[in-house]
Length: 127
Image 1: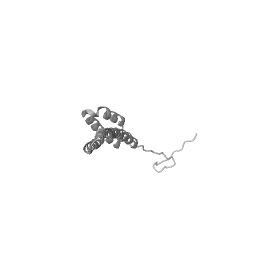
Image 2: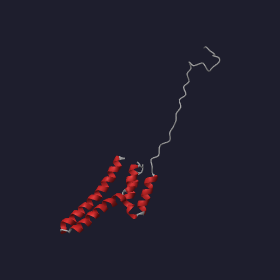
Image 3: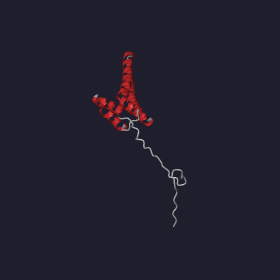
Image 4: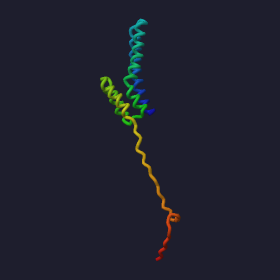
């Protein structure tokens, strides 16, 4: 589960870093006034929150230890932007839970020939 969360965090961090680079380049280029800087900072925060919400189905699948995590992450990245793909991925993340394998109970029955308490007569045959 930790490895899956690290993969998603790396993708989310990449989205967040790209938005930070864009904000830094725009601020350095034009000597922008403080109001515009504030707008870029808010945009940076919204990109971070938007990235988290966009990857939310993948986070849920990783936390629930979904067996088809790679498919959920792939669908989330490729079709999540459509809205319908994001909703399908979210439903899949909740439905695709790890199921416990069926338990098999094995009962060993030992036949102890020294225990003759159950038999009423003992017969001996000799060859």
